[in-house]
Image (cartoon, rainbow, N blue to C red):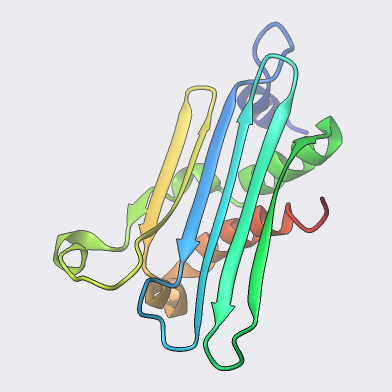
Amino acid sequence: MNEEMKNLIYKEDGSLQPIKMELYESSGPVSPLYQYIVHIKIHSTDKEIHLHYKNIGKNQEDGSKKNVQWNKVISLNDYLDFITKLIQNNVFSLNHDFIGDERRKKIGISFNFFELTLGKETVKFQYLLQDKKQPEFENYEKIINIVKNLNTEK
């Protein structure tokens, strides 16, 4: 881990910088085939890093449902691996509002976002699901996948 990364993750006294992270993604209320919500939050206390995970959905074709919700404390190694991946993918350079004022006026579409505060550094990007198909969204999608993959094990 290089010095710049250490300064982002750790305070001068060697303790971890406080973290608050949230990813919210949903298909919206009028999705034709599959309605879903993925809501993932991380926050730290003085001694622990907490992960809150929710993935709820309904397939409109076959009626199958998904309802996965849980909370856990993340190990230090898992946390360091996670935050290192975000930093290596230049997460703090990705502030952007893909939605814009005009599209924000539309009804029936989902407004999705990722937000991270690590110490004094903050990043936020907002998007619609259709933005994920654009080539310029590639780096943002990497961040979303890193967050979603953190939740593969309870």
